[in-house]
Length: 434
Image (cartoon, rainbow, N blue to C red):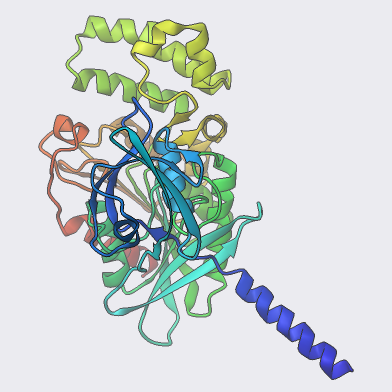
């Protein structure tokens, strides 16, 4: 009887362990453009022959209106839909073709996992303190030694850190080179609602996301093949501002901060709006008026008074003409996310740092200010910090791309890639731990 109970217990234990694994996200196997911010729907541009969409009778030009009864109203909806569909699930798609609606059930194929050269690649799962299962992607050099590690913390957008097939922008090239050329373990974690992770990124708040990073760094430190005295946190954009907190809290070996900011989010957004107005060619008279009469009160209402954009625009319709975001989102993230970001003291974490610091700012980064990067170095010096460097990369923008000026980057014109963009991060990481 005891033997039988033990067998049953082991059976449920094993099944429980496997139940923790995340299901793989699906692929539409098509090129689809998101909503145009005017009317609902995501337009199918191309379909892979013999794919599930093709076999179901969908065609280029069809406008996906609903997926699993969720209206494709905006890019937040579209992002959540793409990340939320699993390859083993039946999906109901409603698409408009001319004046008719096509409603069909399809089962999409799994998105192929990334393929890396010369390293082992592991897809694993963690569960955050909020009960959210999140996808971990680890690359490890071949061999049985203990390796130094890079913990990558990405920016604020709801975009994946997986370099799956067909994805080739310069940020992905940087990730690829860190994985394949660093000779270090590289850990990435998908945010809640991104990639295979559970949740809805457009609704998740800042503290929930931060806890996912904290859960991930604990997971990294538990790995037998990681030298836990040699873990570097590499942060990009929002991740670069979080890197000091993670290093301070989890006793990491160093900080590499790429495209960062120092001030409060309120100050940061006002500076971005001013730079955008300058890029758009506004006169100083126009900039002065718009900053004082629109953007300062708009961001004060959202970040200091903790209102949604909708609440603000409903009471002050004048702002609608100049408002660049949605009613409940900014850059795809929720109002609560930014309310919590505003309350997080990033600058204080820089001041507390004791480990080596490397900071990079591109001279064509119109998102982050040069002054913020200079302030970081000033604060470190005043705090008695000894090992820090700031490199101002000529013509580099916020997206790891070389451009001739702000304007080219702002309008997302084709830029250039340089191998130094990724190699500098690798060299810095090795320089810190040696």
